[in-house]
Amino acid sequence: MLCKMGKMLMNIDRKVRVKLTLGKVTVEIEAPPEELDQAIKRTISAITETQGQERPTSREEKRGVTCRELIERLIGEGWFDVPRSLSEVSRELARRGHFYDQTAVAHSLLDLVRSEVLVREGLPRRYTYVARKDRGIGIGQERVMMGEEGSSDVDRV
Image 1 (cartoon, rainbow, N blue to C red):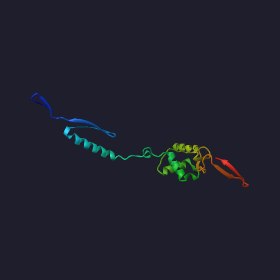
Image 2 (image 1 turned 30 degrees about the vertical axis):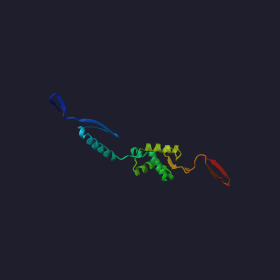
Image 3 (image 1 turned 135 degrees about the vertical axis):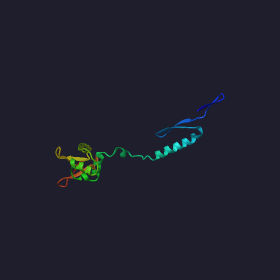
Image 4 (image 1 turned 90 degrees about the vertical axis):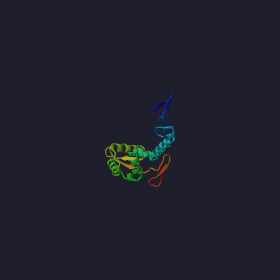
């Protein structure tokens, strides 16, 4: 509000506008100069309080667990020590609360066969999957195979 006092104009409603950014939050504060300091302190306090309540999430929580990771857990638990069919794998994942389309399970199983973690046996549409028995043997290590008469042959892996 402006009022005329003689030849001088006075601004009675003087306010200062400040733009404040803290982290991801940007606010504008408008207050009289004598109250600006207090308004900024209250605003900063409110922003930091609400930002402190946000719980950081891990990467796994954001994206969930993949079908392949779940199958790798089954392998680690020894579930694939006996041959398992595609439908058995899908049922076991569903029993544990993870519902995947059978094609997704089939692709994950094939990836694990290609990376030589699982072995695929049988005929098409009737494959079974089993964990490799020699999972601990790395490239360049030797495996000794005994022949019938006690002779040994060295097999390079």
